[in-house]
Amino acid sequence: MQWIKTTICGTCGVPAIWSNWISVDSDNTSIDSKAAMRGVFYEIEEVQNIFARIEEKLSIPFSHVYLEAHKEVIRQFFEGTLLGRIGALVRKTVPHLVLDRLSDVAPLFGVGTVKVIGFRRGELLEVESRNVWNDVLINSDVGGAFEAITQVVCDVEGRWEGERYIQTAKKRARAIEEFKGRFTVARSKSVGNYDTPKCYHCGTPVTFQAFEWNREKGEITERDTGLRVVYETPASVDSLVSEMEKEIGGEIHDLVIRIEADYVKERILSGAYKKLSEGKDAKDTIFEYTNLIRRRCFGNPVISDIEGNDLRVTIRNPGSEDMVVGRILGSYEAVTGEKGMVYIKRDDEGLKVAIKPE
Image (cartoon, rainbow, N blue to C red):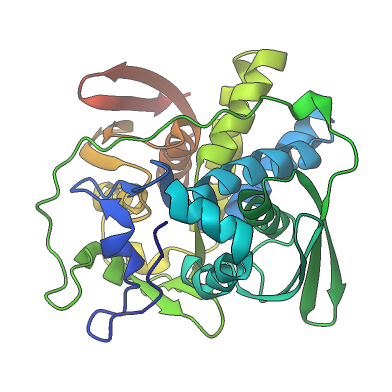
């Protein structure tokens, strides 16, 4: 069993998990070292926007499907802390130790604060959350933790009581066959090296000093934009899109790209990223916007070039490709004022994205 350190460095302000639990390479690829699961920083409205817009466009109510996909991914993450004989012993004898760790770790991921208020082995877990990032998806976080500890499949319900969000995970009475064996999570890998600048005191990569952690509120914010972000895995979105592709075909990828592009475009035009573009021309502005991909661990834009209204970007080791392409397209459309056509190619250098006026 491996514990996650929950301290925050007094020198750089970054949690110790980014040096002892999560590996980060020169491309800013962030991977959980036990479950080999990638993590990224989402704006807190970003994921909700994707599945809400898909639901709206396709008239398919699948929020519960996303909850199941996310719960499966979170279960696998927590099982990474419970490997080997000691992990099995902890599950059996002192599961509350893992639940206590859930309360300690949750604020460092920016999901809000979490407090366990009730637990019956294999039957029920009750949690009080505050300042939650998303009152649908945090249910999956709680459910995934419960299933990892108890090895029992559960359902999760949440209710608001003033500022408190009370979540109850209960043993599932009957299996839901439609989800059985689905939502396979691909193992992530890094392609960069680990010779990166680090804090001299704690060893965490200096790139994460772009964020500010508030453990009391359970928030992560970007220092320049002031936007709240949350550290989650893109495997949930990716596994859901993969499942939907089986049902409706490749058009789901075009839809996700367009939804993300519209979201990013609206954020830019509303002034959410204005501090990134102050005093810069169009070319440098697009560079700054695409660099958010690297900062937030979605991949490394190693080549970015614009000629006239033609943009070319190469992303090394992209995570959640549809969202990465959507972010580039939305940035292009916001800066140039042109509707863009996207051309995608994959080779040994990475994901190559070209955008031209429609």
